Length: 273
Image (tube, rainbow, N blue to C red; front, top):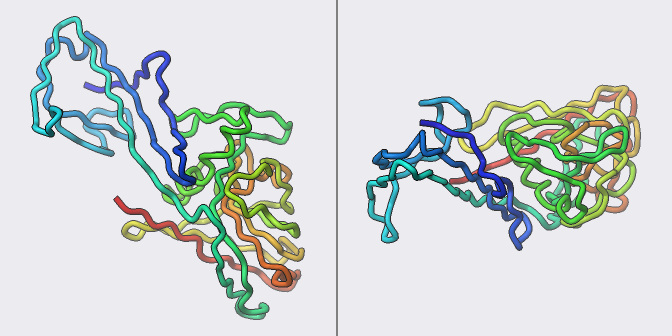
């Protein structure tokens, strides 16, 4: 038996914990009396798809308080509600010193700082905000405190899955310094048009890499900042949200001319059980 029914009044979303970059992904699903009443149940599973015998995210036995497997026997008038939390930690959420090698005919090694910020956005080109259903999890940026978390997890998710929704994971470029704080207010950061979509390598074990290639006519500016966009609604450069933020140190920015392409490789995400 399967269900995707979320009980009324239950939180079924991403819970931001006190420590930057730490989250509980909370899922609450309920089976009706007609589905489970009168049954003897021994195990439960969660799946990323709504298909019987589909791929499984997790599988476990019903257990008592001591961890021993038990048979869960339900009366004919009883429902079953499953509440599951999966803790995820992403990093870095504070600025890290990095070296960027701009090779070929480029200027060579430049120093910069990188972090994943908590910020995400649902602003579109008409300057509206709202709730976005992110793969079954509703996220809203109408509340300023709420939208200053979860962005790092959203961008990490896009890199891990090799694609996302709206502008998440598109790459933006700016001659201005991007914020280098985890909680910032730059939900609406203007990047130079056009933002570019990443291309993703196939996953390799528990990691995936992504890159972007600029043509000779693109981003002919002095590049101070490179961002991974955290805007769930649009990839418009006029509505970028700085979430994966790389800012070159003062004096380390460089000019992209119209004689050269620029390959930025690689952003890489690695995950563990």
